[in-house]
Length: 307
Image 1 (cartoon, one colour):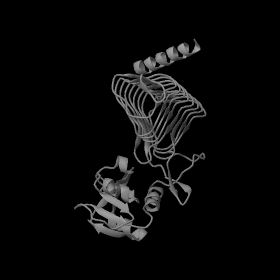
Image 2 (cartoon, helix red, strand yellow; image 1 turned 60 degrees about the horizontal axis):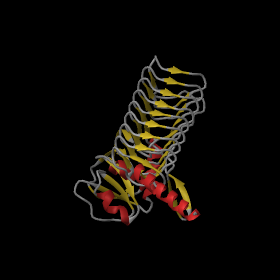
Image 3 (tube, helix red, strand yellow; image 1 turned 90 degrees about the vertical axis):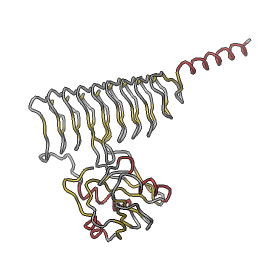
Image 4 (cartoon, one colour; image 1 turned 90 degrees about the horizontal axis):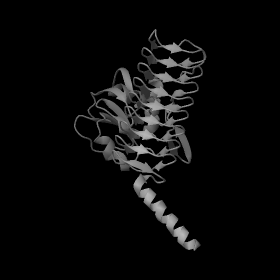
């Protein structure tokens, strides 16, 4: 999430009673989870396993639960509860605003956009020319929609990330402050659900077409001109390349890389990174021709046993 204006690290430390180590003159320009950080961002870490990854990331300011050495030019904010401070910063700068009939703020909707009765459009939504939103679609806050996009009835764009932190046996919700970005000439089928990023963007690339009841998890990226059939589920932060075809009822785990020109056949389960230009099938998904050989061998063995 980018801030509307920079915030001094001293101001953050004072508000939450935090100890500053390192550069006390820094200003923060955004806040992000570790997978999405850029220079100027705040992130947090509360487990030693991830200290190095966080401290040596592109983040400028790290909220942490222990005093440790830090590279020159960065700042640590030390607290017993890094997650709570991170979440409170997000909630303060992006407070909860329900879709309750009040006038929406900072909408930029082109005059040529067609919005059927019953569609709901939230705060800070931008929609370009030629887009068509059918009745019953819901576009939550912080969604960017390109030109000539079709969003069919019942689609819900910008739902919260399914992201929780477990502490003392309970799951605590991680506030979503990211966006959904839908590029030009995309079709989103009826009943699809697209989670916003936790702090970054969920992206649907130019020309990609989705059938009904597809789910896209938080921070996932679909490339250009992909075809996604019904009842596909794509896990959070998975990156899918261009010209990928995904048949119906495929499940794709989170944090994977699916490169260009891959085809995934129906009912397959993808549990690891794939190779470009190949066709995959089965659970776990492997190259289709290998899976077919396995099935043929199994069939032959079964036939022999019958005799």
